[in-house]
Length: 264
Image: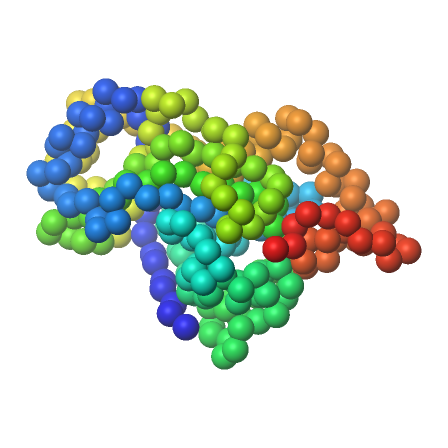
């Protein structure tokens, strides 16, 4: 089972089309596009029945964490996907993830069946799932173009467009459709660095009047498509006592009737 650990600073910027093209022209002097070109990234975000994790995250606490399941490119039943635990403390992002087959990931995150042998990262993710009582709550996808530094490969810059989300069909193999979250002419840029930003990048961002923003894809989807539409209050009622949500995401009444749409 492949495992990866990342520790870095992450800064986000929301660009318009002219800013994007001007920055790309400068970046190609210092950075290379990765081998995948423009590709789709799909995610399932896990949260409590009343969306406690994303509500806490929106409040910008000193420490926050999230659990998600991620896939790169088209997803089939045989695809390798990544179970991820992402934490942010003191401005530093820590990401730990384990590669799993899609069926293994479903059994683990939707049904509570840990893969064997259980790695340290799997144990940490399982602890977070059980501690918070996490369920699949939102699907977020986007088209990504990624670059890495010629001299420092740990410097990464990504450009995400067509950011979209949905709250039903919470399965990575269920297609990448969803409600658009940003304008067609907008691009979300993320700079991922182990330390200080290169001087050439800092200067070019200043020249183009590109400044950091606070932006969470899942957070934006929650605010615009769950909280405003009342789904938040509906889920709070379900998790307050008259309904019980299990790890699989099904809702069970006290008489034992089943419903819900989360299970893959």
